[in-house]
Length: 201
Ligand SMILES: [Zn+2]
Image (cartoon, protein in one colour):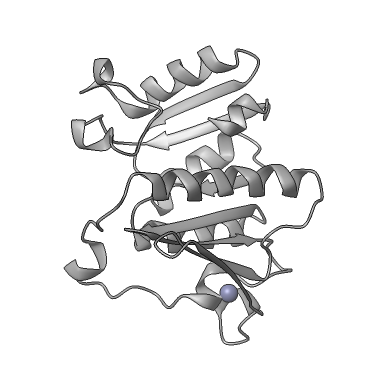
């Protein structure tokens, strides 16, 4: 919503989900009248009303190694914003960003906590330099509890990172911002490229 309001030029949304009433506690782009609709189409409609000058591309699809190739071939992108709710996708988005030399911002949340990192391929540490790959078990994929405000704050920070990076302003490259909304603490941890990570090879 903030990227569209800022007039980000062009935005591509990829999501395979339909709107459920349980989403409305945090996904404030949507409202009750859109329940059951495809999220990408409802999002496109709402965002187009917010700023008709931003071109919105909406694709109802899962992101995986193959589908993403199709979208990367169709358009030229500058930035990937990971808005996924699982580790597997975050690691995939990180890999795609590195392979295609695209800047990327990845945020994760759990109840009152969040973390966010911006990646500049070849130059900064990547997501996998910092976080180890999730175990391929059901525990790695289960839904996490969430207070609706937490993704709102982390998502807004992601939009801020895109805008600041585009303007050449300081961002979260080589840094992880740890957000603790229970105690209202924001901590920045300096990080460096891990020489054992695939991004260093
Ligand atoms: Zn790495």
